[in-house]
Amino acid sequence: MRRGALSEQRIRTLAHNYDCTDDALIDALVAMAAYRERGWWEEYRDTLPPRFLDVAEMEHHAAALRVAQVINIPGLLQTPEHARTLFRQAVPTLRPHEIEYRISHRIKRQAVLHRERPPQYTAIIHEAALRMRFGGREVARTQLDHLVKMSEQPHITLRVIPFDGTAFPTVGHGLDYAYGPVPALDTAQLDAAHGSELIDAVAQLKKYRLILDRMEEATLEPDDSRRLIHRTAQDI
Image (tube, rainbow, N blue to C red; front, side):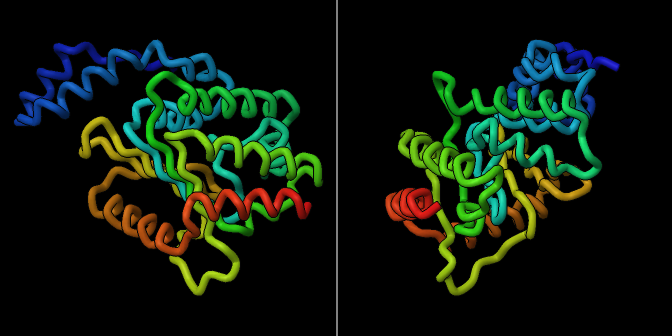
């Protein structure tokens, strides 16, 4: 079933009925609703699970993004061949056309980092993810070279947690944190085996911001992180 956008009047009426007087929040909701039916992700509504569309919409509206990965490269920084390797290992097994739909969707998601006014993007990656040779040596080396190139963009910060670090907190799976147009619209996405889970409860969001802060404290500085990625690519 295709979801329609709420009208501006409907949103403002609902806000009034619920005694919401936060004008910045209401304006942000109106802007998001107006865009919903025009989002590029709508073309995948009949071919991918809804959670894929939700993640793309979350990223599109984010003012800033922070992500953390221990084993995998963040989706917005993956090459097509790296993504293909991961989707081929999905459980349950995906059919070839399902894999291609997912790759296409993932690559289109990456456009958020290349638009005229991209969000600030910070990726925390453990060194373990850099050394996983998904797809073989050539695919892995190309992926690392791509990371180095992306890390040179002014709005992208890549920070690596090295193997020789003493400790760091981790949630054990991928964590994406989207800072909304206003704080009330912040959203965290957990990428677990059963699928992605979107979280917007205030107490939980505070917890995941703290986890990201502490993980970042365990990272190398951006320049040192870039050098480590480059050395790792040469070693493969």
